[in-house]
Length: 290
Ligand SMILES: N[C@@H](CCC(=O)N[C@@H](CS)C(=O)NCC(=O)O)C(=O)O
Image (cartoon, rainbow, N blue to C red; front, side, top):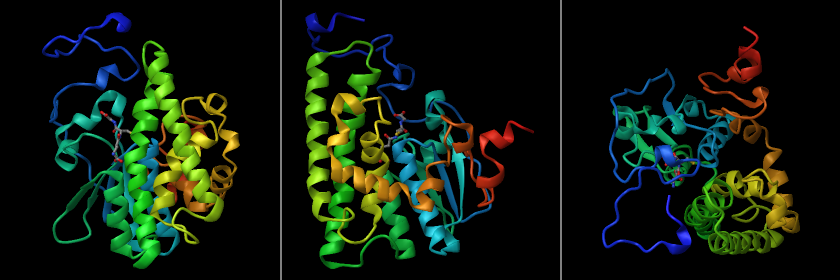
């Protein structure tokens, strides 16, 4: 790797042998599959291919919320995609998501399967399909969609910007960390001011805006992302703390965050979910006793 303070970009960029950093092995400058691998299909109408990162958790929380409301059509199989092993580049996954990123959903409830990728699109697809967690119209719908798309535009500065340079990059670059810490603190303040006057993101009602924002900014507020709680003084954002606790207390949220999880307490890891009873019988602590 070159000394970044002396780096002069050449006229034409060529990929380095290794860019360093924690995710260097999955970075490449081209799209498309790297190998043949079909996706498995279970018995439920909805097939999810994912991992319990913040983007993945949005969808499993949504599905668990829909099931909790009694929508049997939201039954799902959640298959594990290990992105650090390059499984997002298998031919079957790329056919569902040409962008090779989790989460990806195939809705098999109709005559022809419908593929949906991008977590925001998946949340909207499910909300519209079941008529839930997306207000029907007026100010509440506009607020819900505004905050949903705020999350889609903002989180890359948190993950790809701040998280990358603070926690994953091979060298600590003060300029980059300052730039993205500034932006992330600004984003937390945006949320904090809004949540001072609103119980949930879209007003009085829990919606897909909360479901999208909580896995990123709730985790950040609790110091669970990038071990950056003290660095960013997250406890100062009192209204974000209140809302984070409110969302975290929901039973469907507690279940949704366990699905496709491969890290942490074994009792919190339900690596694949194919039945509601799996939460009681198939978590890693139970499986490893077999
Ligand atoms: N905007 C996308 C982001 C998805 C995304 O970045 N997924 C990451 C995990 S959180 C991923 O699959 N990364 C694998 C890779 O970049 O190769 C969404 O909201 O669905």
